[in-house]
Image (cartoon, rainbow, N blue to C red; front, side):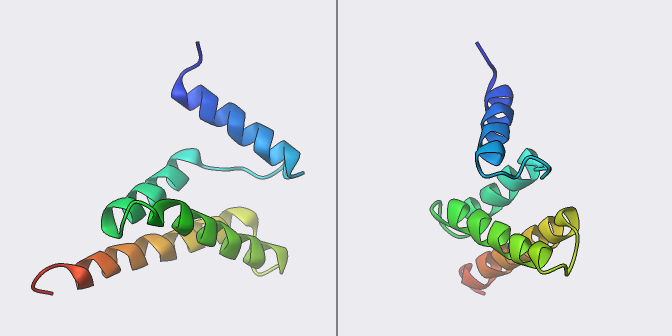
Length: 95
């Protein structure tokens, strides 16, 4: 039986291949970390929404030639992570 990590790696590879993105490198732990920050800082459903929007922004930046894939992904996830933490702090009681 495969571990969760192996399953996620296999799934990621299969999805990238199906979307003809074979050459794209995905840092699964980084994406899951961002999802965790969003889920705990905002509300649970913010996790997939945040990762989708960050990925979409990274794709636009990369596709327009603004930055390489890895730089675009790190920048978009960094912005999303920072905003989620700021949002949580602003929404905290007494803020």
